[in-house]
Length: 377
Image (tube, rainbow, N blue to C red; front, side):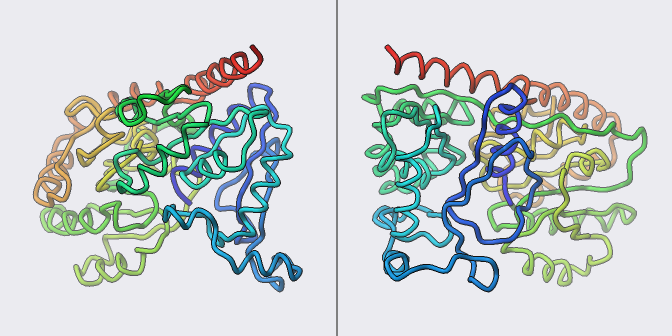
């Protein structure tokens, strides 16, 4: 449940629309069904089922049990590895990468990209897709990335700023370093002429996403605008704390936790104001999603995506990170100024069109075809 998962599914579906054979390879399976619907044209491959056997997981033999008890090679760099990572997972990934007949394999995390670098072969074009950003990693992880990625065919970032950071950090890298932003499908519904007095935020309920800051700011604003509500969509490790915060603020009637809803576009379309209060955003899928649905946006001015997606006073309002009073002022301003809401809504829609799949998918295809042509020479 997160932006990387959603954009991977968006890209895979777009490639299938263009007639390509697409598979999503999951290092570990830990639940019965995925959080998001997966297009039936996409093949889903699970390399290791980490559930208990009684819950549908694998019954492992002695050798596999021993491997499962040993750490993954990813532990050396303290890379954020898949759930259930182990020497057994390393073996499963290695076997897959050595036997796949895919023309192109794309990794979507530092762990997956490290696996490709360690176990992939030159028969396959290997593309490292970066859904965080280089300078977000600690120095030891950046050193690991510089070392491991140098044999890969391409590094794809979601922002131009991150692409420049990779070029500066890896001046001797011989592959392609290219920005291809995330794709976000157009909102499937029209925005109503009149929307409820609702402020909306959505995404993984994690400390880095700033939901607590938004709730505190909303509680102050709601004192003067009691007919407005805040709706929070998603789930995650911070949910219990956020629910407790709503009780502490005495706002359980006006702060609503909506759970996981997919797709989220129709919910953004019903919101009078959208807020993304994150401490950082590698790209900002929710930003584009809200814009595409016509929801006027307030966003923290943080690296990397917001700086490239949001133009202050044109398609959104910027507020400083962690500044509750600035967020309060921005909320109040939009609540009290319908004409500004209309202006930001129109600007956001125009921005979002640039990130629709028919605009983004051809950029992946062009890169893949170029890399494959270079390989055959």
